[in-house]
Image (cartoon, rainbow over all chains, first blue to last red; front, side, top):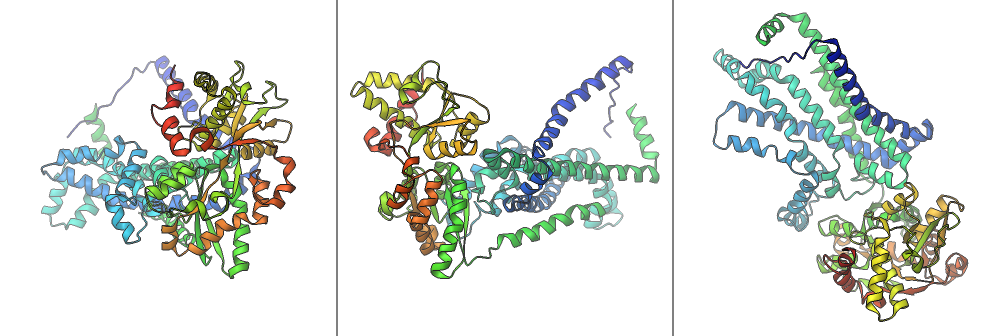
Length: 292
Length: 336
């Protein structure tokens, strides 16, 4: 079992408070101030104007489309991520290392390039695209294309969160469960899932945040048809070129979705840690001993 | 699991609503793919046409819009964007749809009057209140104290018009003296403060970020900005010599056929030439062909000696090859 290392930086109060103050200062400059700025700009002409900008039918459609894309992307990548993580941590097979490297392609490739790759394949002149065109199937410049590139861009998040944890945890517990007669589904549900659920949740949150916010790849394949293929980030850019206040109203929605995701995450974590404490405190003590 | 269902339930709700939003209530649906700064124009024209179509045929039609740089739009259509009609600001961008995809017919330029250009404009200047730098003509733009804003000719049709208009002025002024023409263009380019990628970006740079002494863009855009910011903040200067900027339209025959919109697509473009539509276009500060409307708005459009791209560079294909392609004239002049 790999031991967790706990770094103990000098307990001297000067060091402690300097670090805390610098961190807080940087956090507020880098994160809080821009966030407040967005909301400040959004409400610059008053709340009535803000709600009017959001109630605009194109904006409403952009919001729904964005949520729709995320609602398809997250479950797809959840299943895919678990499968991928399971395959590379539980089995040994040739090309396993290569697979783990390939998995990072969406991180390494610029989203614009990802969009162009999909256009090259599925566009009207592309390899698959010309066949699709003959059969009048519209993938690019319609919502399926947007979902496809979003799935591509966000596919490593879940797997990347799971793999280190599953590697660290090993497969002893699962093997024990199998020996005791558990079915495959039971092993996953009763043994694997409880171990990975935090990483899984974190992966889902990251996937969702990125799926909602993706601009580059979507911009290439969207065709930006208002009221049809214009996602919220594209809509923000479009509005920004027209009239800045409505753009900030839409941008504040994106920021709002991000904040909401973080709040859900915090709530779930808080509830879980409370349950853990109530249930048993022993594992924590063991972990502490190993750590020190 | 409780948390998960709480998380997913609104998303599935959105999924249902979104699906219902995709279904259109109208009998027919038309996708107009257009250039960047035509948003307000078609937002006004579309309801007008829908009403006309309803009167003529009894059918309802819903018009969807996509706006981006016109070259980007042409590429997207070649890649499969299902546009029924294009309303562009570049003849070459329509031509490419025929040349590379056979999506519009070869005779698209003669399908509608005036070379399939229902309205036109020219390149004009917007200067700050009181015209502090005294800018009246292209010659004033090469003075040392003047900083210019216009979109990059590499990425923007608007920017190419500006370049060609300045070149047209230089040719008219210096005749056959190529060295003097090059010198003029070189100075002109060196006075550019910011090269934005598109017309709207250049406008934002000049108006919001307050950079530069003069914004050069379409006369229509220049007047729209002036109207938007009330008369006292900016002034419009239309130079005596400028360029004819055509706004070509075409039916993307292949897509329209597939979508069953050929008839409504043709009428959509044809109706742009009608008197009410021409009046609407003039309201957006475009120059129009209809004689009645022309007389009504004569005072808003000063007389300009309009040179054509053919006069200046021999046509768009030649201009693209000799001036705007990599390593051609524009690149040579920008190298110091």
